[in-house]
Image (cartoon, rainbow, N blue to C red; front, side, top):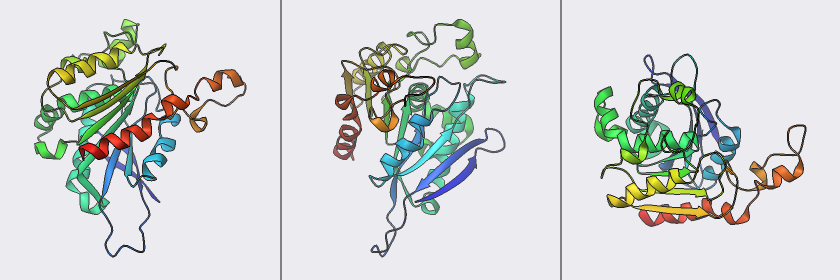
Length: 275
């Protein structure tokens, strides 16, 4: 595996990207063009969760994907939106324009977003054509093939965050924050999952988005698992919180759920069917 630390979107919307490229296979006469995952970890727009970042990237690498993890705009001196969307559009366009250089197949770009990163992914799949026009990019340079949304925030009206001041810090004057209300027939297929007992981001978020996709005939696969806390990530021991000063062993065990862990393999099977 080769890892590159890149910066795209300069000068207007600079964004750091960590690009993981699978190692070349000596038996191949010509390197294959890899499908690309663009990874958007969660973290409530306050940080980028390590539990949804490189450890997840490695899972996709093992399946033959290249991965680009995006350090999108967080709450700070300016709101998250629309900067995060413009940053993401620059990332997608960069890989389209230089697909040969990065040895990726630009017709198979998969957005993967967790929690707050899921909102960014959902909004992007709603608005990609509009974003291309705003940034004066060729529309095909902003297209993605599919999206995977894990316990996503979908709309700021749907239960997270409850604090109006926090909503303002996320959206500022940007009004296009309700992803379920922005779906069009141009949305790519989506794989969406959450749990019925998510205590932070109500499952209504995912349900509203899935309903909107289905209404317009956009292919969607939805899993609502009966139990599990927010931010399960891979739902395996590798992403469970370890016992320590902040958490006890019982707390960490909540994040190991074999029934939910099947989401990753099910996603791959579904992607193969729509390929």
